[in-house]
Amino acid sequence: MQRLRIAWIAALMALVIAAAVALFSPTVQPRVGAFRPIEEIWAMEDEREESAEPLIAALSCNGLPLAYETASDTYYCTLGLNRQDAWPELELRASGEPGLSVCFADDYAWDSCRDALAEGWSYRLFAWTEDRYRYVNLVFTGLPTAVLTTDGRELSRLDSPGHLQISAFGEQPLDCDIRLHLRGGVSYRSEKKNYRVDILRSAGGKKVLAEVPAFGRADSLILAGGAHDDTLARRRVGGAARTAPGWAASGWGGRSGAASRRRTRPSASGGPRPASCLRTASIRACIF
Image (cartoon, rainbow, N blue to C red):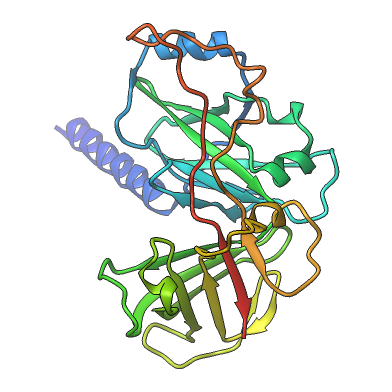
């Protein structure tokens, strides 16, 4: 009887310790692996089912969170301006489904970093778990990235609460509460909206000066979609030297940088799988 009681106490202590470890241990984000030959990826595909839902919940590069566009399943990684052919040291980490692993399906290192930034080439990542897999796109940009998060209500010219996250290569990211509203004249009805953003000390609080990556100190921003910019100059800003205050998040319909080297595999219908293609709204922002 005494032995049984001791066994129960030992089992209970083990459960308590396991719960404490699970509760207080930091979440481990697996590192995104290097490029794998397409034959290896096809073999992993054959052993799994393609997931209808994203397997990756978030990506970071060298500690900076990456912006994500749901419509095209694309992450954006800022690398700074004035890059040459050589790539900087990158450490990408992913979080998401239990047992998640991620690797590059396109070898970005084969391309020039400068060309990849200027052209907005899209590279595929292959994510997999024990029984599922899914591809996701990754685009490198020379400019800061901004992510606006709202509570789901429809935005108008009236202020709404929200959250802002701005990242720039080699700088401390800004993560703050904001209030925002739509702005513009003719562009107000365009698909690509313009936003006025006020940086707040806390949710519902007063405006406050903050250190904005790539800008300096500011308490307000204008994010302009550039819907009526017929010059399409914003396409090249991401790979060119910055000569005036402001920035643009590069991204537009384009080819994958590795498309010429990629081997296509027949799909279930017998046709080739399409190469990755990015279509997204470019953004230009200026402080005022």
